[in-house]
Length: 126
Image (cartoon, rainbow, N blue to C red; front, top):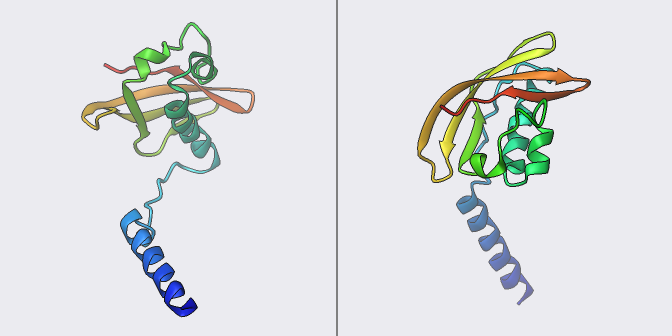
C-alpha cells in the first residue's frame, strides 16, 4: 500500500511540474551587471507597487513625478534590453502592455540614483 501511495505521489508531482513548467529553463535577462540589476529591480517592484500610492511614490524621485496608482494599474512593465547607466543616471527601454496582455509599446524611461537606490525620473506611457 505504501509503495502505491509513493508511486501515486511521484506521478502527481511529475505531472504538476510538467504542467507548471518546472522542467523548463527560465531565460535570464542580461541587465548589465549589478547596477543594471538594481535598475531592473525598480521596474519589477513597480509592478508590485502600482496599486498603492505610497509604495508607488517611493519608486520615483519625487511625489511630483509619481503618477497615481490608478493610472499605472492598467499596465505591466518589463525591462527590454540592457539599461544604459552613466554615473548617477540610467536610461532603460521599457516594454509596456495592458494587464490583458495587449501591447502598448516600448518607451525610454529615465532613472536617477539617490544614495544607493535607483528611482524613476521619467516614465512616459505614450
